[in-house]
Image 1 (cartoon, rainbow, N blue to C red):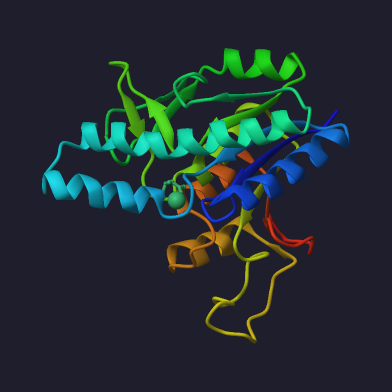
Image 2: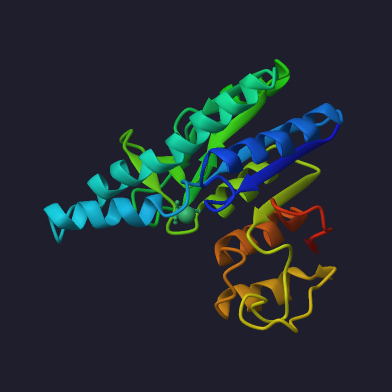
Length: 241
Ligand code: ASP
Ligand code: MG
């Protein structure tokens, strides 16, 4: 049996219709005989909206409280997606970063992953459930929730793929692969069928908004094969690695 980690970004889970679409993608993958771990981001502009709300009350809130606040965005996505999948009749459970024991340092708002305990995650997979994990979240030594920095759900997905020795980590984004230039601005941009970690890292650091650069570094170090593709088309994506 293959184990696939699927990461769905904020655009892919932005509303009810899109959540249903994602539920289809996930359940089809499970139906094909794969174990599936799904990592979700907060819906649409949720994270930005929460940052604005905080600023209305305090222009210098503590990073700890900001992380408590921002942790809520991914929890909305994970529970809604689990409900959409339940509706399709599949066994599923949603888990937060702390429930899966994703331990980080205490650098609130930009925490680094130290280790993943992961017993609960493994037990749920062994029970035959699809597991939905809230991306971007961790827990520190004090038991406080942390976040992995903006765009950090990609890193959660790659870290879980490495931890579980997944066969593939598929990152669904709003473009259907990695292009030599931003295809939203350059209609003649060319899509890569495959790209090396090093080239992807150059693109990520150069501001291509497809993948979080820390996620690419982690994938390279842990030999996690990534596929960047779109939740809105069946076009083959770009393999990174
Ligand atoms: N929701 C977080 C953010 O907007 C994490 C992510 O999307 O990966 O940065
Ligand atoms: Mg986001």
